[in-house]
Amino acid sequence: MAEVALITVHGMGETPEDYADVLLARLRGLLGATSGKVVMRSAYYQKILQDNQAEVWRRMQGRATLRYADLRKFVLYGFGDAAGLENRKEIPGSVYEEAQGEIAKALLSAHAVRPGMPVVFVAQSLGCQVLSSYIYDAQKAMAGRPVGAGIWRNIDAWAEAHFTRPLTASEKTFLSAGTCAGLVTTGCNIPIFVAAHKEMHIIPIAPPTRCSSGSTSTTPTTCWAGRCSRSRAATGCWWKTAPSTPAAAWPACCCAAGTPSPTTATGTTRPWSTPSPRCCAAWPPKAPA
Image 1 (cartoon, rainbow, N blue to C red):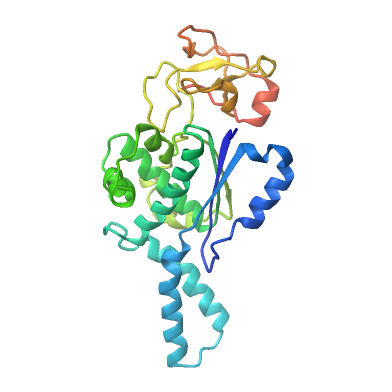
Image 2: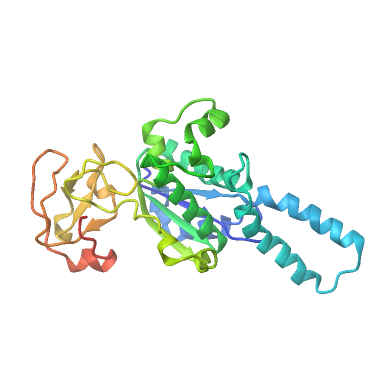
C-alpha cells in the first residue's frame, strides 16, 4: 500500500515532459521492493511557456542571422520562464495560474491513490520558486486570507472549471501541502526573486506539518491538532498522526523534552518524549509551537 507521495517540479529552460523519468527510475531501483509504497508524480508546467517561446525564437531567426545563437536561446527560454511567470500573474488564466494548476493536478492524482499520506517535494531551480509561491498562496487561502493571484485566489472556482465539482476538505488540505513531510531543492534560485525586497516584506512559507501542542487548527501551518500518538517506542519519538492514520506513516517527529503534553488520537495525554539521537539525527529538533 502507498505510504508516501513524491512530487517533482522542474526548473527553467527547454524541458521535455518526461524530464523526471530517469530520476524516478533510479529511485525505484534503489528502493527495490519498497518502491510500490511511493506514489511518484511529476508536475510539468513548461509546455505552458515553451510554445510561446519557440514562436518568438522562430521569428527572431527569420529576421536576421543571430550570433551566439545557443546563448541567446538559453536566455530567451530560461529567463523568459522567470519573467513570464511573474509578469501580470494576477490576470485570470495567467501562466502563473496555469503553472500552479499543474502542481495541483499532480497532487490530486496522488491523493486519489491514498488521501492524507505524507508528501515529499523535489524541486529544481525555478521550480523551487514556483513551488514556494504555490505553497505560500495555498497557506494564505487555507487561513482565510485573500490571495492576489493563482488558483488559490479562488480554489473552488478553479476546481469547478477543471473538474466540474468542488474539492473535498481532504483534497484541499492535500493540495495545500498540508501533509508535506519534506521539501528537497537543487539549484534553488528563490534569492533572485526576493533579494531586492526589504527584509520585512520577505515572508517565508510556514513548515506545513510542524507540530503544535494544544492547537485545534487544521491549517497547513500546523500538524493535526494535538493528535499525536506514541509509535516506534525504540526511537523515543512522538510521531504526528492524522485521525485514523497509523502514526508510523508520518515520517516526522517532534523532539523536545519537558514541553506541554499533547493529546493522543485516543484522547489521553502523555508527556513529550525525551529527544532520541536516532530521531533527531534524521529530523531537525522541532519544539511544539
